[in-house]
Image (cartoon, one colour):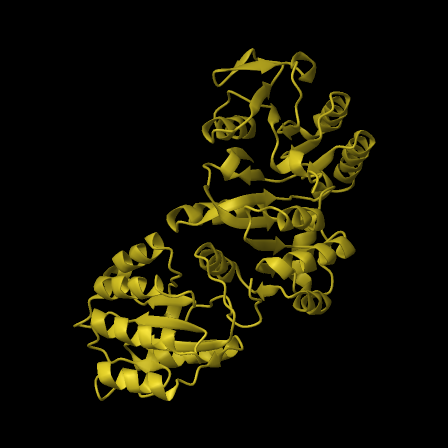
Length: 454
């Protein structure tokens, strides 16, 4: 296969930052600083006619001073300067640009006219654009951090594409403490040129991307989007959240990125047919990111629940039913195994209530028996910190079992201070773990059913 036409956007060999700055906390300062600190594996140039040096690097007044080819331009200058910069990029054979600058279609008619001028200029020179009004693009493995996010990200196999830059910064901050890595983070902004469809087309063939998360406010090119979405969902898990489900949210999306949200019912039906999982909240999207980063690839809908408390087991059963999961019927052989290792007072059914005084060995034996059951496609194990409970020892036992099986194994250690160390252990071991929401509502997790085997 030949080189993908968006490679200059996502894997450039050289980058020029327009508006690179010495002014602390300015967008140009942060973008150039990020590129320096991320260890970009290519040539990096600062362009600012007011300085001869930026952050210890030579500064150029324009592209004409740079004698080597530049593949990607990152633009953080005032909006009225952008059309001329794009024109100059075209004259110097720059292939792609990320326009971080705001002040275009989202501000009204004058901004729309300016945006049209930018796009027309780019098309004349065959330059592809991300933005405007975006956070930027991040590709950790090659050290590309063309964003004004304060900090970078760990390399991983999860791609996140979002029309909200603010949501990108939130998930990047969350990911650091949850040991989640990314192949790509793409903030699209107004999507004046490159839209979801083309980005998905690139990610389908990107060997570093194993799973894809999307935050959507509106779609500009529905045909391209659906075609690429179907192609992506055939080979990789795709999970999305779409806002603007109601009239008020649709109007808010329009004012944010100038994207029309469209009919939510039609959108929902279309993505179901494509084989994509839709979640309803950012919390669920973060849970999906955590699960997918742990290699969580479910292939069936039959769930076993192991718990040391009856109430949480019942809540988990309700939640599973809400998601369309089946509560697995344990085989007679599994029941017999459990009879041998559990107290006579255990529940003798799924959920498997191993009783409040359960220690690590009881968790190990019960979870192992359920994971070995051919009637079970995945296991959720729950712990509530009771007087005789040793949360960390139980967590280590569950981690040990998880390493022996390919089936999904999720953990929900309920509580606060007593289970924090256990949650850290799960994070370090890359085991999916959930924190219950307020009022002890069982956490929403990515569904095991309606997902392909990859």
